[in-house]
Length: 285
Image 1: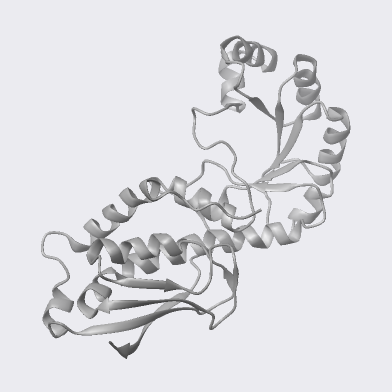
Image 2 (image 1 turned 45 degrees about the vertical axis):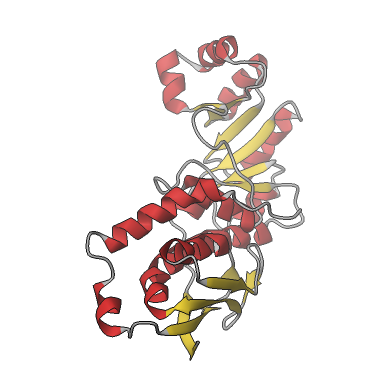
C-alpha cells in the first residue's frame, strides 16, 4: 500500500518552532559574516548508512520557510530503503539560506529516518507471520504526528494516536477502578458505539476474566512466547491480541510466531537512533 503523505498543516508548526529555536533574536550570524552576499550553491543529501527514508517533505519545508526561492529535488521517496552513498535529494538556492536551514532539515530527516529504519528492522524480522508492528504514545513531545508517520514509512502501523481516539485500560486504571470486571463495565457504559475498548493483562487468569466480559482487544504485557501462544488459544479469535514489552528485532520473530495480531513497541519512536545523513556542498550555482 502506498504511503500517504503527511499533510503540511500537521508538521509545519513543528518546523517553524525548530527554526525559531535555532535563529533566536539575531539569526544565523555565522553565515551572515562568512557567506558572500548573493552567493548560490547546490547541496546534496546522501545517506551515510543503510536504512529507510522518512521526512523529505519536512526537510524541504525547513528550506522553504527560510527562503521560498530554494528548490529541493527528491531522488528517493519516503519509505524506500537507503544504502550508504544513496543520493536522497538535491537542494539549490541562496548559500546563506541553505546554511541557515540545513541543521533543522537534517535533524528532522535524520530523526524520522531513524524511526523508519528501526521500524523496518522489526517489520523485516516478522515478515511471513500475520503479526503487524504498531507504535505507541511514547513519542517525543510535539513530534507525535511526525514520528507516527515515520513508523508508517518503515512499514509499521499506528496504535491509537492519543487519549481521545480509543479506550485503553492499563494496570493503574484497573487498580483504581477496583478490578478487571469493574474497569471493563465502566468503560462499556461510557463508550460510544464507535469507540474500541482494549485492556492490558499480565496473566492468563486476568485474560480469562476479560474474556468473560468481552472487549475489542487485549494487550498481553511482558509475556513469554509460550505464554502468548496460550493466550492466543484462549482468546480464540474473540478479540485482537497485542503483545508488548521487551520486543527487539532479535525477539520479535518468536513473539510474532506465537500467533498474536500485533506487536506494539515504544522504543521505535522514543529511542530510535538518528540515521546518519549528510548534506554537503556540491557546486556553485
